[in-house]
Length: 139
Image (cartoon, rainbow, N blue to C red):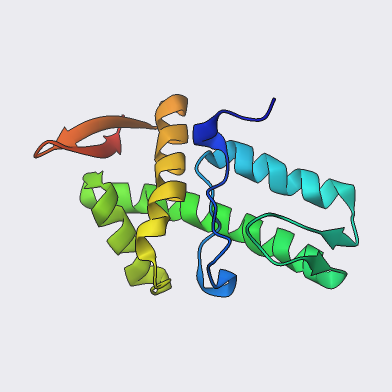
C-alpha cells in the first residue's frame, strides 16, 4: 500500500514541467523519495508526471528537485518571519515575487502547504487563522 492520498504527488501530466514547481504535498516524504532516486543510481527514471529522464538528466532532475525543496523550505520560513503571520495566498505571492511566475502559481499551494505542515509538526510554526483564513506563524 502506498502513502496516504494526501501525501501522494499531484498529477501534473499535462503541464510544461520545466516551468512548474515539483508537484508534491508531503515535504519530508518527497525529499526522501528524491534521495532514494539518487541512491538507486539509475540510468533511467520514469515518473508519471514528467518525461522519461535518461543518463545525466536523471542526476539533473534529482539535483534540481532537491534544490527546489531546500529553497522552498527556506523561503517558507523567511516569509513567515517577514509577515509574522502568513496565509497561503500571501506565501504564494511571496515565492513568485522572489523566484518569478510559474504560470500556474496556485500549484505552489501544494508544496508550500507541505512545508508549513512539516514545520507545525516540528513545532517551528503553528497553524492559526487570519480573517477566517488558515495562516501560519512562528511558535
